[in-house]
Image (cartoon, rainbow, N blue to C red; front, top):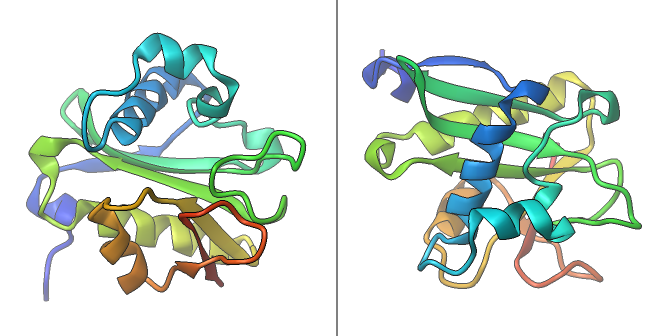
Length: 167
């Protein structure tokens, strides 16, 4: 039997909560700067189009998981449900949560990103959700992982780079 990435890396996973804003700010900054430094922590906090990824609000259905090694986080996945009047980059429908995932560079290549996304998919299915969406920029190598997990281009009125997974 193959061990999970979190087992191989000796990680623990727990639910993300409203008190994990610092993790989400850092993860959002890493995601935004995936190919080169373009944005600052202050921009993540100040720009509404970035800031709504830096918090989870369980009362609107948001959820997430963080993988920790000792006291440090090494990976996170979270799903936010944003309204049409304040959509995210991967918005397709207010009933379809938008997924974000971040694995710190030192933990990449061991399958943790796939494991976290698979965990989020399972939670969404258990909740009876219709699907998940995400946004990925041209050239981001993570796109191939999303495709292998079943995400497809959303098309229609969605922004370029939006992918969706029907559950």
